Image (cartoon, rainbow, N blue to C red; front, side, top):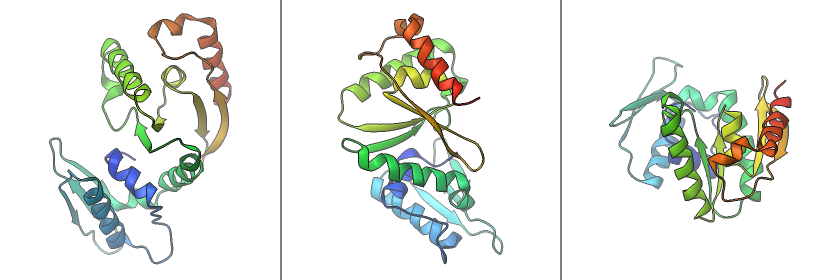
Length: 194
């Protein structure tokens, strides 16, 4: 959900906010986003009404400033994310967070060494907390390195195409990428995409 801060998105999903329910308009979506931002603190948000039935523009003060349309919450992507959340959250151990690896931060545009450092830091943080994390990425090797379980989602409308349990030992290291098991797991995930 490009532009929506992960804590705000998590709060909307946690409270089971669904914009596709009958009677939910753009004004109600804007109010829900502002309420979710207030619940997680730290976001200065304004909502500007669109023309007629057009989506409202939600602006989050920066740096950097971000803006997105309330139309996002009426999209099939948000509906799929809500369904995924409802399946994952009950099975999670402790609080659950969704992190979009290549969208919420500019991970995709970083050089390889910096990206590896960030992945290592992310692993260190996750392993130090009793928290379940749904990490959204398009990078198969990254998914295998970070996850205990990879759920492959694809198609239109989005649906689960397969699941691969990751049997790599923890703590995970960059050196594991050179192991035959790592390669086999990557290929196992890739088969679900073909």
